Amino acid sequence: MTMNNSNTFNKLRARFPFLVYQSYTILKVNDNFTIKFLFNLSDSYYFEPEITIPARAFYKTSSISDEELETFIFQIGMIELVSYWKCACPATVIIKPFKLSEKQILWWKNLYFNGLGEFFYLNEIETDEVSFMNIVSASDRQFSMSEIALNETIIVPIGGGKDSIVSLEILKSGKLPIVPLIVNPREATTKCAELAGFSPMDCIIIHRSIDPLLIKLNSEGFLNGHTPFSALLAFTTALAAMLTGAKHIALSNESSANEATVANTTINHQYSKSLQFECDFRNYCQQYLHHDLNYFSLLRPLNELQIGRIFSRNELYFNTFKSCNVGSKTDSWCCNCPKCLFTFLILSPFVPMQRLNQIFGQFIYDNQSLIPVLDELRGRSVTKPFECVGTVEEVEAATQQLLKNHPYLLTSKLFSQLTDIENSETGIEHLLSGFDEQHFLLPMFEKIVKDALYA
Image 1: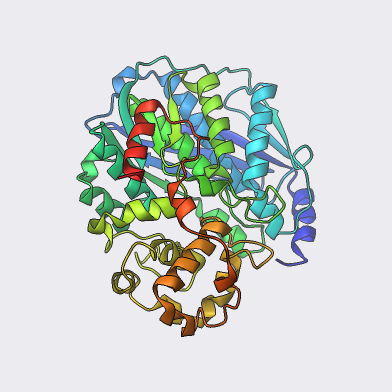
Image 2: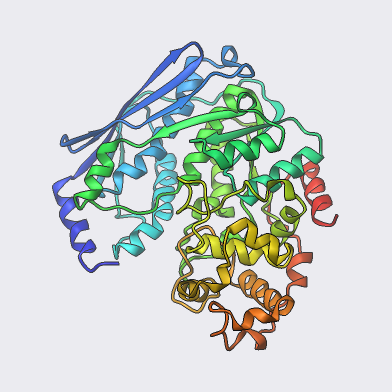
C-alpha cells in the first residue's frame, strides 16, 4: 500500500470523468469468432480488448440468432470494462450498446464494487457502493432472453490446478457428457485436459487479450489491482454454453472461497468465486439471459482438505497440475509464494513427503522466506494472502497434521519458529467428514460428489 494512491485516485477521477462502453464488433470467419470491444476513457484513451473463440465441430451456431449472440457478448463487455475502469476510476460509466434497467444497473454496481474490494483496500481508496461510480444507460435497445433448447452437456472450466481436475474426475465417474473450457491455454491446462481424455479439439478454447495500452498506462502511474476474473469467466462460459447448447456450467469453487481475506470485513480476493456471487449470477442468468442455464460450483459443498484428499487419489496428474500464479508463464512452481505453500500444506496429509518434494522440485519447508506467508495463511497477520487459498482453519489443521506425521519438520527453517502449533485444538477429522449444505447442486450432482467424498 502507498499513501499516495488515494491522492492518485482523486486526481485521475477529476482528470477522467467518464468511461464509455462504446461498442463491440463480431468477426466471424469459418465459424471462428473474434469479438472486439471498444471503450473510451474521457475521449483521451481508447481501449480495444479482444476475445477469440476458435471453431469446434460440436458448436451449434445455427441454433443461435444474431440477437441472442449479441446479448451474451454484450455482458462480456460489461465485465471486461472493470479492468479499464479501475485505471482511472471515472465517476460516470456510460453504456451505449444496450439499455440497462435500474435493477440491472444496481446488479452491475454491486458486482463492480465487491469485485474490486481488494483493489480499493490495497490502494487505500475509501468509497462506498453508492458513490464509487454511476452507470448511465445511453441506449433504448433492449436485449432479450435466449430461448434456444439446451441439452445435458456440462461445461467444465479448466485452470490447471487441483480443483478443476477433481471436478473433471468426479463428473467422469458419473459418465456425464463433458466439454472442458480453457481460457488462454498453457501447458498445464491443455495437458490436464488431455490426461482426462480430452484433446484440444474436444475443448472450448478461448483466447482473451488485454489492450496493451492499459498495461502502458499502469506503468505510467495509473491505478492497477485485482479484478474479478471469475466473473469474466462466468459470462464467457455462458456464451460458450449457448454456442454448445449446454445446460450446465460446473465451476470448481469450494466452500472455503467464502471466507474474507481481510478479517472482520467483506473484502474477499475470491469474491467472484463465493457463494454470494454464484447466487447473484444464477439469478441474473435466469432473469435476463436464459431461464434454463444452470451455473453452479460442483465443489461448493467441500472444503480444501476434502478436495486435497480426493485429488491425492489421482496421481496421474501429479507432474502436470500447477496452481502457482507466479510460475504460470513458465508452467512451474515458484515455491516462494502463498499458492505454492498453501498447495503443499493442503496436500501434505494425503501425499507422501517424498512425492510432494518431487512435485514442487524442492523442499518448501526449508524456505525461511515463507515464514511471513505461513503467518498470513494461519491468520496471524492483518490479512490472509490476496490469493485463492483456503481458510485459516484448514491451514491450521493441515499444518498440525503435517507436523504430527513428520515431527522432524519441527526443526526445519519454515516450521522451527512455530511455538503455538502443538497447543492447537484444531483437528482434521471433522473437516474431512463435513458436507456444506449451502450449494446449488442438483440431486444427480450431489450424489456423485458424495460418492467421491466418502469413497
